[in-house]
Image 1 (cartoon, one colour):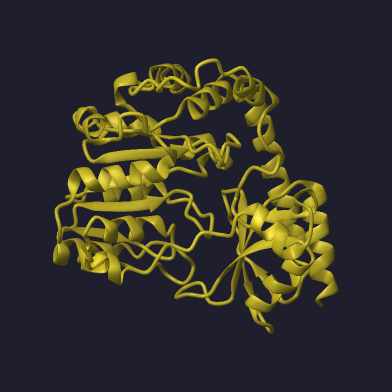
Image 2 (cartoon, one colour; image 1 turned 90 degrees about the vertical axis):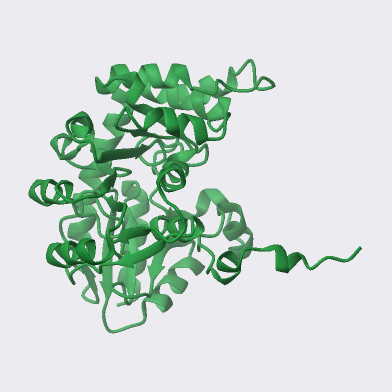
Length: 366
């Protein structure tokens, strides 16, 4: 029997634009004819120092990969509870923070409900909202990437959104939200989700993770991808109001955090001092890279990044051409060409050697 398979697809999904991830490392290596170890990969905000030896050892010693993982991820949640000084019952693990973004929406949204979004920002907020049949009310940021608080207040009155997702620091500009902004947003009748994927590269007091138990409408998400060097293993977690945790545990996939990801995350937490040492290197290198970028007259590096990347506006030449020229040399950057990000390049802070290679290549394009 023939069946109209496309007719089975939800019309809203058929009409959706796909999320545009960067090309896989090995695919780019093959396309460029450059061995992976020769590529200067500064396009996805990964940790340039890689995975800790202790994490690799934990993965090598996995004994029970053939057994389903603990559906409650008890070991890593206990370690995180001790590490953060927070109640274990407020912690939910995810296959990356991306899964938790989707779970929050799946838990709270009915078709047609509104999610507030403040672009330019992380694209998964908009993508997952559409996937969950929500309406997205966009409140664009100011030209300097700060939030337009009056416009947010007006959007809340007009659309009555259930959720507001904000990356803190924001991706792609790397700026932190002022504490007074967050306090004002918490006074709104919605659930505020702060995505702290890059918070380890900021001042410790910038995090709001210790304040979740003070606010019924605050969630904080984190990931092991950047700080922990585990982007390929997909491990993230959220701190939630404890009333929501039983529902999240009910609707998540039962074995969402696989045994390799949990073993790696546990080893990362157990060796957080070594990870923090790497963070200090990245922060120092961010400062040095920013100064070096000032010498490239056709690049305008935005100041104030509190993340592991720097956003640059390109002047006098097409940013797409700059990206392509650098890519042919094996130097990978993230290119943007959309509202608020016209002719922009985002540069992940690499190792000193990687950053020097980048700067030399940029100078050759003067």
